[in-house]
Image 1 (cartoon, rainbow over the protein chains, first blue to last red):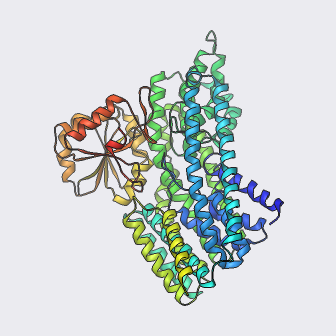
Image 2 (cartoon, one colour; image 1 turned 45 degrees about the horizontal axis):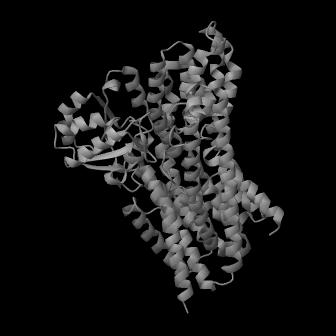
Image 3 (cartoon, one colour; image 1 turned 30 degrees about the vertical axis):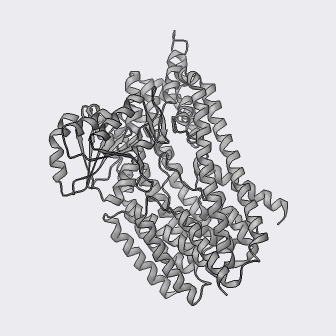
Length: 225
Length: 255
Length: 157
């Protein structure tokens, strides 16, 4: 993969990581967007779509509320697409998932570290903030955004590097049925996570019936196709 | 309070733009506080003009604006607008603080229900269905556009409603469209994501054959059971990594 | 079914309560115990706006809560009781043996408090108060949402 392409993916992953929490929360951080666009950059939309869908399911497992810590799937999906791209087609699902899940965990850790850095900066500036100095306030805020951009770039770079390593050392080493097993594990885990996360949102109230109706409807359509 | 209203428009636009960064300096101590303060500041500039005051009222209001706050990011505008308006209306400082505090919970809960548990999974579920049915990149573009029409409209409405109602902001939340959208979003999301799951399962397993399909059904059922009963310990990401490790080991041992 | 969760949370009723706990528990009512909110009509209106119509919200002063606790515990629906400060919840446990578990869901930064967990800031006096509660046989754990692991008291005081 050329350096230009790697840099393009790095830029995209950084934007995606910045979007999740900081600016502008337009949900390009959703794997379903991050993945296919990364795929398009590599000229491999199909792989991008597949990993986008796969990680979108993992994303359903997460509710971004308050101080809860959660994995970050945006830059992770970009890295996953990069890893799966070389393996061509469905064969890359498992390898992509491996790279993506590890990167997602790293992303979650980095978000926690960022928030601690921000907390420390706020504590240091407490006096100026209490005095109502608008310039200090704006500078702190801008520094936070900048920190997040750096964080997103570092996480994406880590993911892309991991993708290179996996492509170089793992892709050829696995026998065909090993690859198939990895794919089954990846898709199975994603579907289980997506279903569990959705059911937590749906709850045991009246919406549960609507969910059941949806599952039946979707199954019928899938059957007829 | 007519002077601030007539001069408010440029302030409101600037405030809205800043609201798109509201979580940019999210921290454990003040959470969204700094972002709220930054977004509120353009609406407070009129206070500098108060005669014989030397900017004391303005600075005090800016300091209050940056105190602890946390709610849904898209609805923060309601708090920004309402607090700024209350500052203009001469509401006593303790009351402004009380208003901000009282807004955290309701705006968080409403936004989480309307967006995180409603609009977002609803539109994302529709996009998943479209991808599974073969619409490809068009589905992704449609998702980004449709989702953000709702997103931006909500942010803009929230800021304007907050500024309009000030301390009476509860009236803004009574808005029938908002209440109806929140009530409808839960069953609509459930139906759509429910329908998306089997279609996506088919889409992702299209290249699987024979034993792989049987194994997939087993993995999904087992994985779901584990996630459901061990919800405080097991997360999707851990389940995924554990299953991949088992699969890699099995694939390596397989003769 | 009674009250499934006695929660300490200074944001009182928010998304973690309504969506995070409310959905999986299928909550039918939420009791908000806070003397200031009980006395303020506009604040009550706000809190009610954040909750779906099928969930009843009851506002109570500490005094009223003490009197009605038995009634809520007999309620066939599942309920959550939320209080914003330790004093209020401690008062409820002092005169009653019904409250056997307390969930610390979120107490945020304030002057005098120091960080114990990402979502729990306590002053030394507050930490001591929680320990007193625990010494009386109340199980005190911190847990913001059901998908997080509960943290035992000794790990954050």
